[in-house]
Length: 316
Image 1 (cartoon, one colour):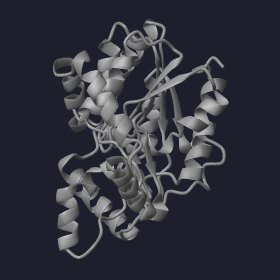
Image 2 (cartoon, rainbow, N blue to C red):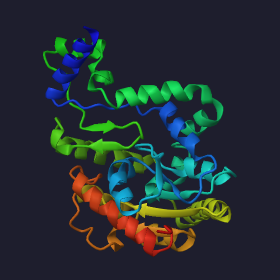
Image 3 (cartoon, rainbow, N blue to C red):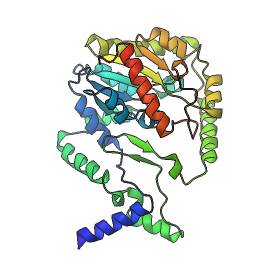
Image 4 (cartoon, rainbow, N blue to C red):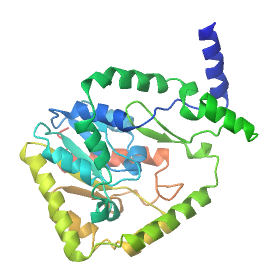
């Protein structure tokens, strides 16, 4: 009877568009970070924020480059400096790093954006937690009824307001890859774009773009991380994902390419891929101006893979 009831509830929520999704918290991040101990160049770790979470389609990459393992360590809305620093300091790590980066994500005020996840792994994570976290992720990754917003309390709150719980248009999987379905989005897209722009404009007042000397120092620090990883036999590559619309214009004006990206690419000592330099990216769509639509994410992933192979980051 319990199984039949669970099946009926699962079918009910799926019929209304809800999909399974895990809680991508610090424990799940630590679970995957732990798999990188002793990693070699066949192990590719993905760093950055939501653009590489949503825009790097691992199935498309593996179809073209079998034999590699990808580990998703990106954290949405946060710069990757702290995790890159952690991997550089890990003497057991000699894997391949593919890091999604922008000038804003690397500026000094954001160095510790992901530090709490790194600290959690080194000070609070235990091998004893692995089975519990793994099982929880596998169950949530298969059952829509286990999504947190469908639990009893949030469900009752939604019903009291006279509506069913909204469908999440972004869900995370047990491997930490997030999938966005913009067609399912039940909010005003323009409102999200406008809100993001207002938030970034406010932050630019408190966190203005670095002056050239400060930027050069930061690039030199990142170059040191690259050297540490590659001296152990690892590889590092950086990529800038496409952005569009008013958001792209704001970033161009605030962080001119010749002053930031070009200086970074010339001095960091690693392969750097800028979307504007890659053939066929002009037509790729970002429905919310910041993240690639799924079909274009597949194409961009394939393009990245070919470029990394051509430039020697991938051996096959």
